[in-house]
Length: 220
Image (cartoon, rainbow, N blue to C red):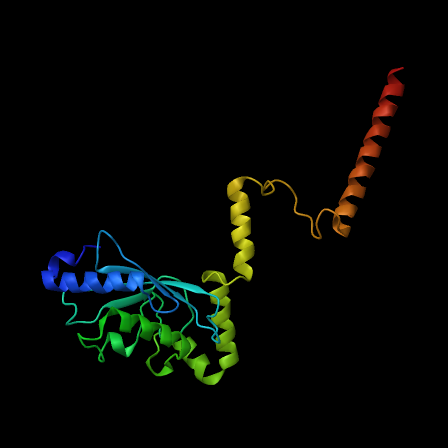
């Protein structure tokens, strides 16, 4: 993607640089901004899932792209972390009024980030990009919350199933995981299945020894 920095007037670049520097040193609660040193118009951001929501415990990566007409035109926001939310599309696009008709040049980047975080607390099913999430939010909140929590656990690093996968990945990377040719025994090395396999192995070894002994006697 081409940088838009060269398309922005110098005074706008200075304003963006000043706000991004302030956001980096004094970020809003639960939000961190990581400037792209090569492209000031491509802001990488992380947002902590707010407590009391299905996104609690998750850490969501997103980006803000400032177009060549910024701040006359709003930035574009995208979630990079997969999330089940009415106002986030399949490609991560964020639908919120402040990024559309409610935008004014005076609002600034901080206001946008705070609004997106608030969207995790108060989704708006009336302008849903994810229609299924919007429908569940209105008709069956428990199912909506369960789906949102599941994706938060899998993709947002909120413990749960993802922790086991992460540990397995680390084990594979370090070479400590079992070889793919080794059988996986339910119940672990001391479980009933393991004892059953051990017993069968002992029987086969005893039978082999008996056969070898008969062959040896025949040769005598």
